[in-house]
Length: 364
Image 1 (cartoon, rainbow, N blue to C red):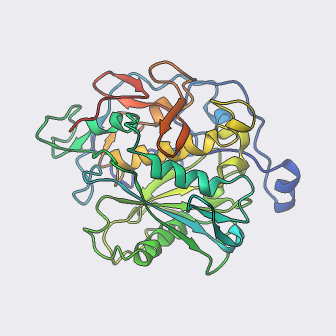
Image 2 (cartoon, rainbow, N blue to C red):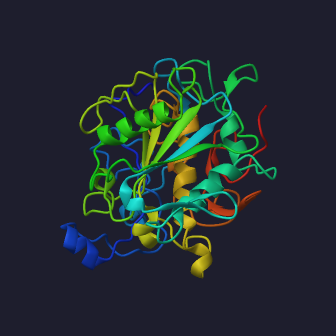
């Protein structure tokens, strides 16, 4: 396939949830009301090529045929990078003074007073829990690799495979409260924040960033790249700093290629981005947070510099093909137990089964 970063179809994820009153006050149109589960449609946001792995809201996905037939193909790598081959490392960046005052809870997690539903702690629990308690959700991704021919749909045992996040993927947390986060950050600003985080964490070489991803989390009430607006029907997306199609252009990095995710304040979009998708009541308030964050994580490690990793003929990544598939069974969204708790997660695409899976043996 070999779609270049400048021509690859847009992919992003979105969740929905500011009230209509709050949106009107800020001059943005309210998101449409949530509706019944529908097949995923890979069209939301396609006018923006940098939005890799776009996860549309349930409304944006409505009325389209599911993209769940063709397997993923290797894109040949970008700057020699296709997938995350070393133990994945996730750095969380809470961007902007709007997150409020920082503290620490009894478990050692960073807390923020401007985080009304506790997304910050939940994100830390999720990424710290990956690769623990024998969870095999992460095993699905380990079947993919690099070092194979462009267009390949399978991997020999001798290839460099996606690594399992043994003992947890969380590598660091930073509250960047030097200034307020933009009300509607551009792609360039998001990438620049990730590059800034690389310097903060001391990852100042290309080698140090080879198996790393920076998750840029924006505070409630903000609209990074148009999130939670009438034209931003997505929950989140990922990319790398050198993508020239980013709004505002590529971001310069003195530290090598930097992979990052635009993770907005997911619960601002409510059920449109997964609230109560798996669990009812208060137990499901943060379902969308872990589903969406896990979605982007899985796509980053299998397509670290998009689209040099694994995508299908339409440009969809592994998690795109399984978004909004329903709950339970072999590939539907469901709770996954880790050492840090139980998390609502969606299935991801498995080439060796030609379908969505929530669990897979770890490929060495």
